[in-house]
Image 1 (cartoon, rainbow, N blue to C red):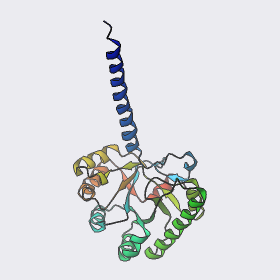
Image 2 (cartoon, one colour; image 1 turned 90 degrees about the vertical axis):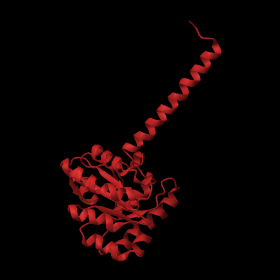
Image 3 (cartoon, rainbow, N blue to C red; image 1 turned 60 degrees about the vertical axis):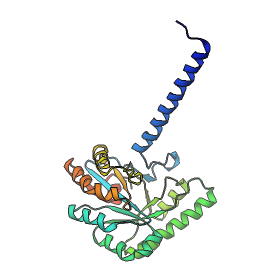
Image 4 (spheres, rainbow, N blue to C red; image 1 turned 30 degrees about the vertical axis):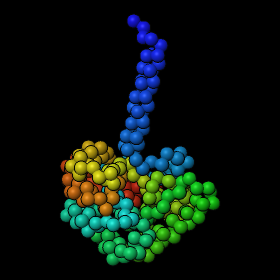
Length: 244
């Protein structure tokens, strides 16, 4: 039985509507699986986001640029004997000098977190890259250890910036698994998701200003150890994979 033409048109629009929703969901949730890749082919090879060629090693990374309960995070890491990489903004490092020094003394890596700017014109990118390099040097002076890993605050970084960073011996490190802790998920759901989805070479993104991160971290570390994973800093993970 054929439908009247108006009903057929209405049915067609309905199908298109739900198809668009479905495809949008694939894009959004698919991006969540590899969140951190900037999608710029020119940057490939200069940016670490998921090192390959490693068997068990992974890296826990924390972006620090505001109110952060670093003590609660490092307490968990210390009790488990796990190193991590803390990407800190220059202004945060200047306001928390002793904390930055203590992170290094505890065996963690301190990297530089800087404003991204992949959409800027070349001139703007070069200026931003210069500021990025200066921030790395400033944080090195505060921590007493040379900064070798850098990360934009968002996913906006250009080939100009990565190339200039590389010349200054600064490796851009993104992330391959986003915990989405800034969306305030239930900490148990977060822990199960991270433990389940982690693969060898994973670079996992956390934010220490999230209560859910603090609550989920012990279970995440324990669960990942139970799966046989070993923990490295971001720079060590890059070296072991031959990314350098």
